[in-house]
Image (cartoon, rainbow, N blue to C red; front, top):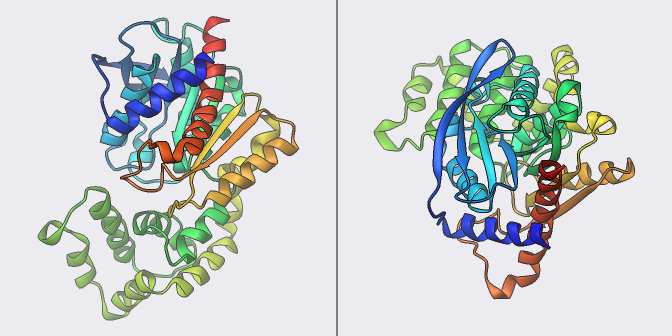
Length: 347
């Protein structure tokens, strides 16, 4: 009951963006051989547990306003939020070593004397980072440090998620450019300047540059005619991008990378319960990815809960009485996560 009330409070705070009096401070986590900066959001009163929040593939990293809102909502609900800075993720890189970085920060946060003090903590992550977080929680020393996971808009297999981003008509432009910048060179024999333009287009999107502030158009204009034609084809033809995704999947490099960053392959070793939340109209990662992830968890007999929700699909969605059933289902799923985090903190 308490966990579901905490979930409702978290959701209301998240929706209204009103958090009360909270303190935010910066600490360093001894993550591997490096000191990793992290923001800590302290609840105003009692602390029911700790949650490590892994930011998504945002150009602003842990300083992204969306991260700030979620972490403040967590703290308002009574859960200390710890948001480390992941430089590789902020740089839009997709690589197996990011799992190592998340694993190191999980261990460091749970063992920090002012934070976890040796007790397991919660892990919450959105989108691509949700998949990496699941992998990190299923292996090595982090396996015993995770009380529960909350994957928001995550994926099951990186190959199917990539094919959606490249092949779907409604796919998100930002995600599409990030995937092409990371994996396009495995299939396209193009000048490096083309991929610099692709990354800059993603950065224009991420930094919300408009008009004359955009940098990608100038880079594209300097490309040779054949490269400009290729860029136009990539941006306008979903059929062509789908063919590129298939060529990527056939490459030897993909065979080496994809198994290492596909969370479905690691679920058998996962001990922590998993709460899965996904927007029904997500145009970055389709909800089928979370549905498949949940089905595999249940097949393996792992504790998990899934909620497909309209609240994460539109910016103007609110907690309205007409959507009471959806509100309660979402609260039950977040409550499932908070319940296990609180139990570990009390244990």
